[in-house]
Length: 273
Image 1 (cartoon, one colour):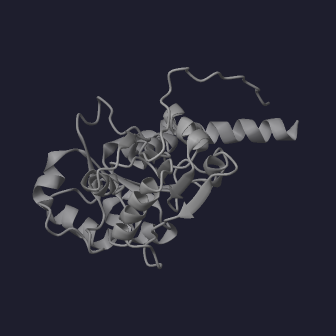
Image 2 (cartoon, one colour):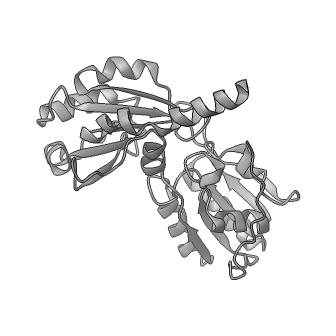
């Protein structure tokens, strides 16, 4: 079954002025999770500087004449330097372009949006921030794992799986991290999952604590695997980045809340009719 909807966007969406840069979060993958401000930006932008994880269907919403500049960063592969990307935004804005910096997830959640925005400030370039749904929220929801649940946790912590150098962030207080929140959500953690597990268990997290891996979150290639902290390293061999790792009791709720499996069953049933 398909639905056709005529949606009229609000009339007061902002105008994208020449010489401005908009830092826009594209969400974790599913184009339906893009915000109206994001759609509005795509409709007006002269040039789009986009990341590796931005879905092609989102880029297709741009006006046909918009220039596309790929600025994706993928671990272990040749990637543009962050300062070069930031400087390019300044250059394009100074040329009078409407510059859309389109980033996967949310620009201000492990997205280096803050670094790029500070470069714009220093260059006196006007900018707008458009938040996006971060993978640690959207990906968890699509996996049927709530980030918070009153029976499980009243706090959640988001953690990067590697530092600026690409190594495990050993400068963190792992004891405080392990004891600070019942639920930990790690970004970019697959490469160093062994060390992360070791640190958490040394800090007191139990070996039988539930762990969930969410690969390619919210996309048609999404894969979710659950295990325990003790078996997480072995389980991670099945997972390829990009992936979110959740540690905590909320992972066990997936068994009841895995709504995407119901959607898949319904789709299969309709296809068979």
